[in-house]
Structures are given as structure tokens and as C-alpha cells.
Image (tube, rainbow, N blue to C red; front, top):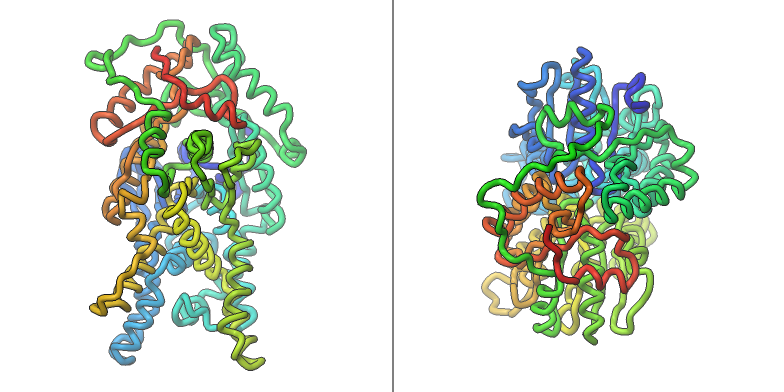
Length: 592
């Protein structure tokens, strides 16, 4: 693997959700540790599953991995980081300032913006040679999906620039002292990220046109902020030899060949590696050790179906779920899940099905890397499409605040307000407001939302919950009727959450964890959708048949243990792009 040759101290793995970042980051950590290097594997994903890969609970303290000498791991827990950040600011003034002032500070530090900044604060500490990381030869970052990662990697420079200006009170963060103390750390982080001798960025993609386009955008955006040392890894490529065994495998090989041949020019110039699709799930040390090994011919014999799994319940189709959704006439439909499970495709397919029945539908996305138009590739009379673009909504929010709050300020006051609005966390407020405006539309039409990957979505819901608590406190016992966005999300008559997963161990575990998180917030998921299922297709290739067999246990688990209702969508021979192909996702399921 070229990306493993002469590795620098910091290795970042990033890319669109579901392309295999965690598996490749973990396998890299194991590989380097096996050479005697001391390695720290860090997850910056708010929905990390590194612990699941190694079969241990990691958390936010550096933990040696007992099964791998020289390897330790750390998961940056955004909530724990936020609490430590709050304590660092509040503890020194507790008992000094009046209780009412302290309460106000704590309220200012209760939102999702503080959570993001606190997690980023811990991230930058790892880049500057702190005492707890000095012993490690390599620090490997398994990052959140693309949009969130670009935000994270931009923040050291953004906050450094904001602090250099020396102005603004960053009111959504409380006292600026918590950031001011970190000025030197942020500056050092910027230098480390931009130094090709210390930092290498590995873009992970699949041999699919959409993920390669996403990788190309990421390449350009990160190169623009100084991360020039980049490599490309194309993961999960189906071996060409499988094409002779059945039509589905042949169609996949042809599709992947076209995608690789049409790779954007910016990616073609990067050093490249390709990793073959494996017949096994990448969970556990043995599987990780095999990931970079040369591909071997798939076994011709497929294991028999385990006892008790031969007769799964009838698999419902996506159309069955849409029938039930359509009966309500309007409402919010949110598709959530791990990155790369196909939320954008399925959200678009649900919206197309509803619009095809003559129902008014607004299809939108809260994913910073979401591209609905590329999936829809057309239009329908009843369907409108939008995107919560962070840059656009943030600028609109700034202008709105300046036009209202700033209208009565003098020149000095307006200048201070403008500085405050240049704070990077202003984006979090603007995105939440845009999210709130869109979901209010669901009272009169269908709103279908493609959400960002799990971790980023949970941060957005955290902001929604913080707003709800603030409004509820202000209303108190006034008797005034009010409804917050959180109350709408908690109402099953108004909101239906569809959890999207693949029939694989890690995505199902993550979807189950997400379901538990949502339930703690008072939101009950309405249905599960198992996407891109080989077990529901007619695969005949030995490798694909083995993967289909692996899926049966996960499908059984979803139906029996997790989902009150479900649908299974088969893997398509042709990418589901365009209205007609999207409608085919609702066709009856074929059984192997």
C-alpha cells in the first residue's frame, strides 16, 4: 500500500460515509503496531464504532488494546469533552460570581456549539505534542464523514483567525477566555496540519461515481486549507473474476470499471491504492489483518444456511412503508443512520414515491455533503428540492441579525456585533434555525429529510433539545401554548423516523445505538430500512453469495429485536439514479 510507505506522524482517514474509513484506519493501526511502532488510534466521529471493531469499550481515555501490542485507542466523546470544557470555564469563578450570573454562563455553554468546540479543542491537543501523546510514533485519526471532517479541519484556522482579531464576545460560547487560553494551541495545530512531513490525508472512496465526486470535492477543499499531502484509497472493489459467475456481479464490475475510468482529474493525480472486496465482515483482529493482503479466489462452495435461519419472515418492500406514510396526507419523514448506508438515495426514493401519488413533497437534506439533485436527476410536478447549505444559511442569518439587532446600534456596537457573527459557531445556530423552518412545513405537506450521518445529526438534535428546554423554562407556568421543533420530532403523528442500515454487523449495531439515543430524547423510530441487500437479490457469484449469507443473521436481528416495522431494499445492478430507477427500489423483494 503506497499510503503506508514512509508514513508521517499524523495520518487522517476521511471520505464519504460508509466507504470503509474505520476499517482501513484500524487495519493501518494494526499494521504499523506490528512493526514495533507505538500507535494511537483516535476517532473524531461523534458516532464512533472503533470499539466495536476491536470488541472492546474504548471511551474518552487512552486505552491500550490488549490484543494488539503497541496499539492504544481513544474516542473523543463530544459530550464528555463539552462537560470538561464547561468545568474549565465555570470552576474558577464558582463562588466568586453571583449564582444568577453562573447560571447564565452555564446556559450559554449548554448548546451544540459548545459541544463541537470542546471536541475540536481535544482534537487540537493531539496535534501539538501534549504530554499524553508524546510517547506515540504515529497518531491515526478515524474521522467523521466528509462534511463534518472538513468543518473540524477548518476550525483550527478559523478560530485562530477569530482570536487574532481580538474582538467579539462570542456570546453563544459564554466567556471567550476558554478559547483565548488555547490561542497558541490552535496556531500550532494549523502548522501541524499544513506540514507534509508531519501530516498525510488519506481519502477513502468506493468505485462509485458519487463517492469519487465527493472525494474530489474533499481533495480540493482540504488542499485549499493547506493539507496538500494526500493519497487516494479505493476500497471494496469487486474482483473482475466474479463477473463471469452471474449477471449481478458482471453489472457491478462494469459499473465500477466505468466509475474508475471517469475519475475526476484531481484524484487521478494522487498516489492511489485499491483494496478488493472481501467475503467477510471487517470486525475483529483476524479480519483487519487480512484487509491489506492480496485477494484470493473466492471459495466455490457457499456455507449452508445456519439452523433456524432458513425461513426469515416475509421481507417488506419500501412501497409498503410509503403506503402507510402516504395515508397521513402530510408530515415529516426523516431518514437517519450511519454514513454510507444510502440515506440520500432512499430519502429521494420515498419522496419520488409520494410525489408520484400526487402528494406535495419537499425533499431536503441537512447533510453538509448531501447532493440530492445528483440522485434525483430530474423532476416531478409535486416535488420541490432544497439543501440546508451551511454557508448560505449562515450568511442569511448574519444579514438578518445585522438588519434587526444591529439596526439600532452605533458604529462601534455594530462593529462588535459583526465580529461576534464571524465566530465559527455562528454556523451551528444558523443551521438549526434553517432546520426548524423546514420541519414546520410538515404541517401542510410532506417534508422528507435526508439527514447527515449519525454523529452530526445527534449534534443537531442536541441543539433542538437545548432550544426546547430554553423555551419551556421561559414559558414556565404562564399557560401559553407553544410547540418547539423537539416536540414535533417527538410526536409520532407528525414525524416518522426511518433508520437506514446495511445488513452488516457494524451498521446494525450503530443503528441500534442511534435508536437508543433517539428514545432517550423521546423520539421513537418508526421503521428500519435495510438497504443494498444481497440476500434480497439474485446474486450467484461465490463472493457475493457468501456476503449474502453473512447478511441473514443481521436481517433476522433487525426484524426480531429492533424494528417495529421494516423494509428490505435489494442491491441494484444499475445505480438508482433518476426517477424511474428510484421507483424500482420499491419493487418486490427477490429471495435467494
